Amino acid sequence: MSEAIKSEVAQQGLQALMRVWFDFERQLGRIPLLQRLQRGQFSLDDYQKLLLHWRQQVIEGSRWISRCASSFDREYSDVRSAIIGHARDEHRDYEMLEQDFVAAGGQLAAIHAATRAANIGSEALHGFIMYRASQPNPVDLVGAMWIIEGLGQKMASSWAGQIEQATGCDSNCTRFMRYHGSQDEHHMQELYQLLDRVCSTPEQLAAIVRTAKVVARLYCLQLEEVEHGQ
Image: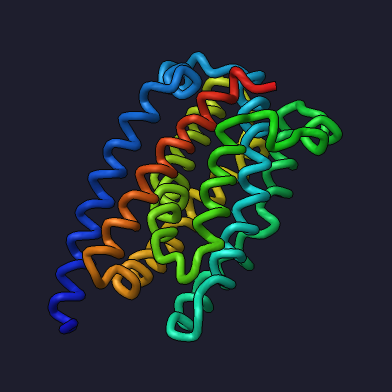
């Protein structure tokens, strides 16, 4: 396939992923927890619950990124290297989240005792991504990264400010969000490069977009379950 055709497919992929993102934003806007945040009615208890449920997904994130990297063969060695670097950057982010939880009044023992099983959305998200990450050359997981890294880049800093205003917490309680709000811009630039590299056929494009849609829906389910989980 010519480079011109590959570039055209990658451009179509970017446009399709932007449409998925806009739909994801609409889904987020329907979640009661985030509606309260937008209205300034978000409580300290809401924030503690969010961090408690979020932690397990953050821990699992570096695991599935590492699994994804290990599933690429030699043809994709550059992709594997980029993904390994990403896993290295984020594999201890959960510690920052734990510190925020304690700064917001939570007990470290409580967040350590929390499990993925407490949130069916987290269970579903982890199960789907780990399954896809275990397949040979899982290029479709660029779609998962598009949703998760995009959330950090586009939402995290805004959410941090809204949480501080609504709860009276200071920035010592929102370091995890603020860190991702600044760092995920760099990660998104890396993601654009990965998209150019792996989205070169209509089949790859379709797989990437489908995975982005699934991850967007499961991520919303995870946030919905913050109030309903154990």
